[in-house]
Amino acid sequence: MLDVAIIEAKGEGAAHRPLELPDGLENLRPHNLLTYKSQHEALTAWTLDELIGHYVNYRKLRLSPDGKRHRPDAFGLYAVATRCPKALQRRHPLTPTAWEGVYELPWGGQPVRLIVLNAIAKHPRNAPWELFASEQDRIRQGLIHYRARHPHPSRGGHWELLERMHLIYQRENLEMAYTMNVGWVE
Image 1 (cartoon, rainbow, N blue to C red):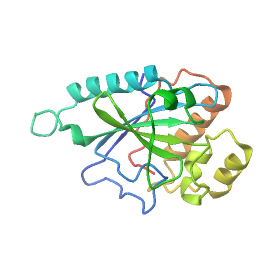
Image 2 (tube, rainbow, N blue to C red; image 1 turned 90 degrees about the vertical axis):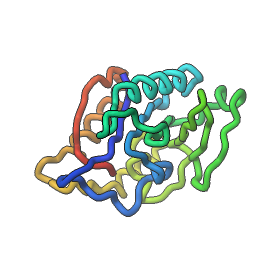
Image 3 (cartoon, one colour; image 1 turned 180 degrees about the vertical axis):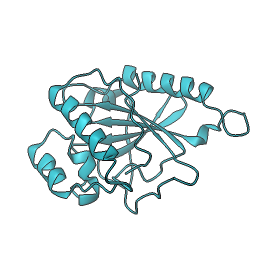
C-alpha cells in the first residue's frame, strides 16, 4: 500500500545516479519510502502516521547483507503533495530547506522530507515533479523539459512507469497496487 519505494541498486548492473536530481531528492538513502497526495487529496497527520507505519514494517522485513537490520539512517521518508498541506502546517510547522517548496518535518521520531509540487522552483531539473503539479503552466514546463535517460532505452521501464503513474493521476485512480522494477533512479 506504499506509493513508491526507491531502493539503491547495487552490483554490476547498477546504474549511476544522474548528476542532477529533482529538488528534495538530493539526500537519497539506500531505502527511500514515499507517499504521494494529488491535488484532490490532503496530506494529513494520518498520511504521515501511515508512512511511519510502512517504514517500521519495511525496516523489520529488510535485512542488511550481514543479516542484521539496517540502521535508521539507511532510510529516507518522503511526503510529496501537489498542494501545500495548510491544515497540517497550522499544527506542525514546516522547516524550509535550501530548495523552494521543500521542507523538513519531524514525525514520529523520524524526519520526513515534504515536497510541495505547486511550490517547487520552476527549473528543468524539476520536470518529473512538474508533471504531477496541478497548475497548467507547471505541467507544461514539465512536459517541455522532461527527458528520460534510461540506461537501456529499448526496455522503456522509466517511460512505462511514468506513463502509468500519469494515467492513474489523470483518472485519480487511488488504487496504485502494482510493482515495477525499473532498476535505476532519476
